[in-house]
Image: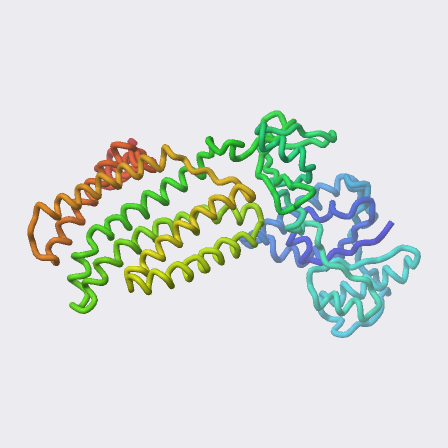
Length: 432
């Protein structure tokens, strides 16, 4: 049995703190009740907590006199304490303040009951320091504190043998053994015990008895990754392809005569190289991140730099600046291929040929439209850009809707509904 003396700030912080001390004795100084009375008129959370505590204390009066002690539902006891006439307690510094009177009362109780530990519970740091200096144990109120590490993350890690990992990748499921209860849709990172960096992402099925891959073993039913790839390609491919086609006009407009001929050759090649660079760094490298194989970043990037430096050296000697551009394109193709191969030993990343074909078809129609408009209108470069680019954008958007590239139809429908809501009469908006 312990005596816990509660300060006002504890009750204002948590009005139900009376029930947080198990089967011990909770002591409320009369000074605390007087302070609570001052706060209960506030229209704040602090005022609400003060009123809640007052109602709780009033309800406990039905169990007996508070000065004698009443039982709590936790098995402990609540008692309102005060110094009786002639019990001045130990004199403390600044004894006229409420805090000093509470400390003096706590010291008196400690002296009167030497066999029972007396603890002052307060959220006031200075009061805890003052109590400690006078030989009184003081603690902060922490029963409502939640530690981040104790929160449920929705994720678990399981280490399995290499055979089970191979079975999981081959069959797309793995039975959960050991009798432990797992939650449906709980995410799980499977780790190979022979190589912890070799991992697979999975989730618990609806029955809680087996693991299913987030990406199917064959990589054919990974909607989220496929959508990311299609959206990334739907943005990068037409932009780079359109820049490559209109490069002669752009070079003639923004560059001087000494650089135009070189730029007209180099810009389209570099534009195509950027497509493979984006696919490698913005998509395939996700595999290295998910598997924790950071060394693959260095391996892939380092091999690309070495390949580019070696090949460009010979190409530049033979073809000059154009050789450097061709070297860059070859290096990005090499980087894309090696990154794709490395994903087989990291986290399998799908490449949906169906989605790639849709984007490629829309982009090729755009390219044909831009090139046709360029040949049809024999106009100066600065005006040609203003004609062929809108024509290319329009044709690409039409093809995206026709082929539903990256869910274009859904996004278009949502945009139309949003516009209708904005411009709809006020009365219709309210009824809808």
